[in-house]
Amino acid sequence: MSWRIVVISNRAKLDLQLGYLVVRGETVQKIHLSEISLLMIESTAVSLTAALLAELTKLKIKVIFCDEKRNPSSELIPYYGAHDTSNKVRTQIAWNDDIKGNVWCEIVRNKILNQAKVLELAGHNEANMLKGYADELHFNDETNREGHAAKVYFNALFGMGFSRADDNTINAALNYGYSILLSACNREITANGYITQLGVHHSNVFNTFNLGSDMMEVFRPFVDIKVLELSNLGMLENFEKSQKMAVVEVLNGDVLVESKIYSLNYAVKIYIKNVFRALNDADVSLISPCCFKE
Image (cartoon, rainbow, N blue to C red; front, top):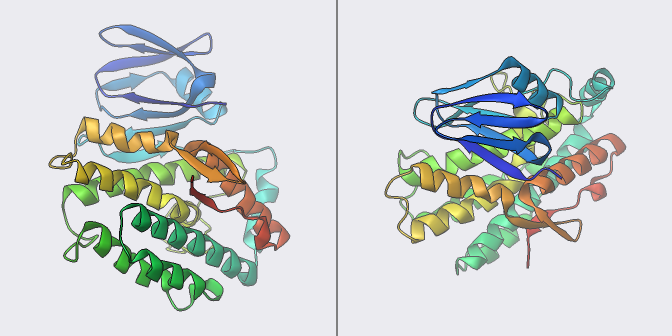
């Protein structure tokens, strides 16, 4: 099982040598590609060989590129994630509104219950209100319990004056973490032969990652609690390298799915496969919630 998250922060040249990623910077380091789940190119002073990019794509290793401010700006996605991609896309197009609405309801329920757990862990009584919202969910979340829960949730975590639209380090950390989650979900979507543009709920014509945006919702609270922890420790006066690395490490944290503990990075793989099974078999009971471990 690949598990390493490799972040390249300084000037370096990356190439491929006998199945190893070779990082040539101030020193030379080698990491076998079979160990890597995510490669993040944080510095714009990094060069890569075409042979390395081709092998990373073949092995379905997620590669994220950052801009001059060291924020994720793009990712490497293969054209072909599975041998039967064409058939998978036809199946995806044929998903009917009934199963999509039911699956979205399950995704939102899992997300809200994870948010409630974050509030419980942080000692906020609003957790009970969120559990009530989860119980009130209807088909396709027609009453927008997700939106009501989000308002209560973020105000409880970061204060009544907090808004997700604010320009501050908390939102910078949240957005950074969410972009990593989106990339992880996109990796699994394409690896399973589906396309990211056609979502279950998200349908913005300008969003290339509608399906990834659907799938990632369940995992957002795992980023939220890490950002809360950094904020409570007084570590978010700035959002720089050490804080970013702490957020990236969320992918290696333990979570519970299918009654077993896995890293979040691997749980994304399991969860998304289950969602596809539910969509294809029209059976939402096939979705095993991804939760905080007890």
